[in-house]
Figure 1 (tube, rainbow, N blue to C red):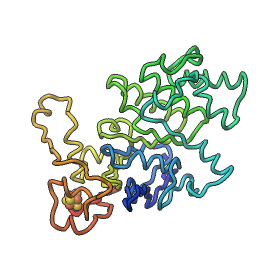
Figure 2 (figure 1 turned 135 degrees about the vertical axis):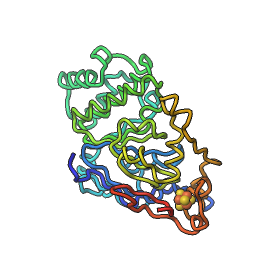
Figure 3 (figure 1 turned 90 degrees about the vertical axis):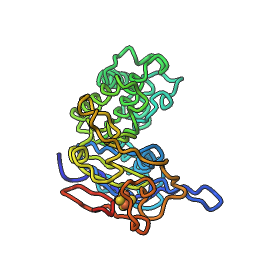
Length: 318
Ligand code: SF4
């Protein structure tokens, strides 16, 4: 794995104006880098801004502030042929594989959408490419003539992945790609992502709402809370020694498969709901639910700082 980041996000903000002077700060100052060939897991409860972050990075949304550098180019300044070339390099896989597939199109035409938009192949070559993609995601050639409703949730997500792969991207943003699937199917889809990463040298930004889901795929993980990153480090370090009280509570909620350990597991139950991003608390955004909150937590927002080797945390305890 090369150390040169393929994606560098700096101070990224995405605010939505909602009328009557209120502003929803969905993403409020994200900074992180994703190295070529790695999987970066972006995790947080629903409403924390992780999906908005993904959509702003791929430029489905324009950024309010900040920078997204992909291969050294500022994504939000790209125009014309450079923007088109970026659109080929970065693709997205969505959470709900049914809602994201047009029910009136055959699977073959869905998968070939990007091929057609970018004018890559026609006729026999296009057909062969679709068959190759179906095989790559564990489906078969006959599936090309069928419609999305004829497939299970797991198969539909495989179709979504084939569609993303069709134009040979370098980077895939997978927005909760396994959350809507049965637990028995989730591992299969994660394994497919890993296989495709090995075969195609892909880099992933893998968005999920709980840490259990990203454990087996992520090299590094960023934990988000109310539009901000609160902890970023290598997967092993995060699971072995979580520093931020929010990460500690998320991890304590994951059941341990060993019954003896499970009985002694200490669970940290968080009080209250995630506050509205329309009216975030002063100081540390987590302070209204943090079991370790101190008076200074209300006064100043903790910055993301290096607390150990490549282990970043935003908390006044460190
Ligand atoms: Fe808790 Fe304070 Fe750390 Fe925020 S800064 S996570 S409130 S201890």
